[in-house]
Image 1 (cartoon, one colour):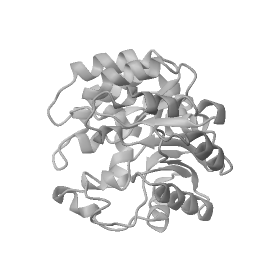
Image 2 (tube, rainbow, N blue to C red):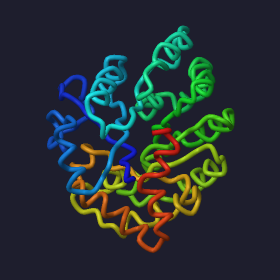
Image 3 (tube, rainbow, N blue to C red):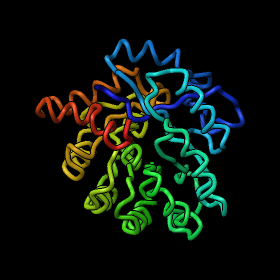
Image 4 (cartoon, rainbow, N blue to C red):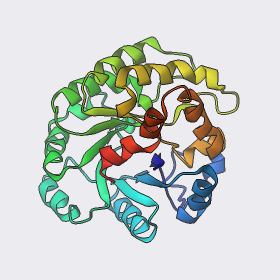
Length: 275
């Protein structure tokens, strides 16, 4: 089964989606399941994990409704206020909804570099394991030091790093990111999504060769059993078509065994998210 482990849906709103800048104007419109279903059919993708793009409970409920109505959406990663004093009650309530596989906070947008280590946030994370929830870590390279300290605190919590922690591919920066990613990868409960690479490079002029060192570092560090394919559709469309983005990954892994390729292209996501 081929699973896209990371994509989004939204009904475009200029205020809610203000992060979509002028150079990303191509995605200033609605993206809904009917738009993605055809893309998946053309690319041989069997299903996906839909990930939150807005930090509201209404976003979580929006994705949940879409998943209930579209069987190719195998699970969702929603948003919940993990800092809430009522986090236990909220998690218990949502636990009845089996299509919710985990949660994410847009930590990359937080001014505090050590946001992941805040006491109230850590308290919320400590409640996830009992419900078998996953947590998607969305950070930038300058937040990887805190990420390393964060994952050390939860050796049994299932984590996945989104978009390889967004290395600065456009600028060619590698070493600082690589050192910390290798350290984080030593924690076997942490997975990594090979997604978002094309949008960390130059949208208009990126080449697969620019991406290879970053992908190789991730594959060497995390191994074939903890790496997942993700498209980051529709965000990826600012830098290329869905097929072009998928082909980058499939070309990278074509020398691996068929079993290893199947793991990266879907089975790891199935196992991690319990799809």
